[in-house]
Image 1: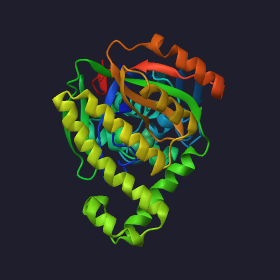
Image 2: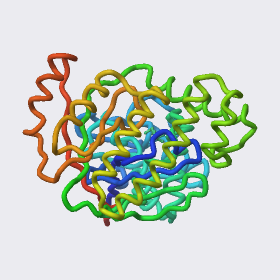
Image 3: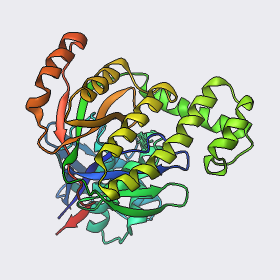
Length: 359
Ligand code: GLA
């Protein structure tokens, strides 16, 4: 028996999932499988192709700072929150989601572990339980203060569609991607700036302090006009962070409409605007990504591009004509390598269905 959970991309709505904002991600056709069976030993045993085998006792469920934490976190909470007795398990992990590319390989392993192990011990969880459980592992066991986007879409994804989510109300709606002549592609810049985690948390607290100064509980309580009138209350950084959140929400709504109407030019334009806002107002891009976004936009087949995910490196999502392929960007990779001594990786991504269990 195994569970399979996909990675994700986000079309638009970046750094707003922890700010009560709107997001528009889709699950991709790359996934992690977690196989579970009863172990003949008295320890849990986890094996992953490429990462070897680790064993641990039921009473050794503390964080070790490696990939096994997602599985330990699952067993830990199933034991402590659901009061379940988990017998020694043999767990095998298999994945084709590139690690570190910002395609949410960690959300995928969390979701697949929860689904496979809970199914194995006969616990029924609904979809909402699963993505919240997965976020809890990431926030509290692993210690990364992410929003709900990655876990949500790994569970809720649908073939051929993106998911529009209002992270304040958790109401969602599937959005068909009606683009006949273009599709989304990913460039993994291979750059990972070490300031990433600290800067993510710093952005979160800058947004919180902006809200406090404006005496608001949520960015949804304030219009862009009202915000512009109140800007003297904020320091420059808080002003810029808040402006990103407010304008990004508007772009997500506009993008949902453009996708439904099949307007690829408009979607591309919104991606570019989002990039500028993430670069200048949220200040979470980097020179390598800015270079690639600019160069991609010089290509006639490309409609628009932006940095995707947590930022400070990672991946770019871009919209280009359907016949775009890796050959078209080879010259850019050569130029990129000359400038930054590294190469990007190119992926095609198709909207795919969310996680499920296979008996
Ligand atoms: C990371 C987090 C998400 C989200 C993005 C930024 O991917 O895991 O919850 O905050 O960054 O949009």
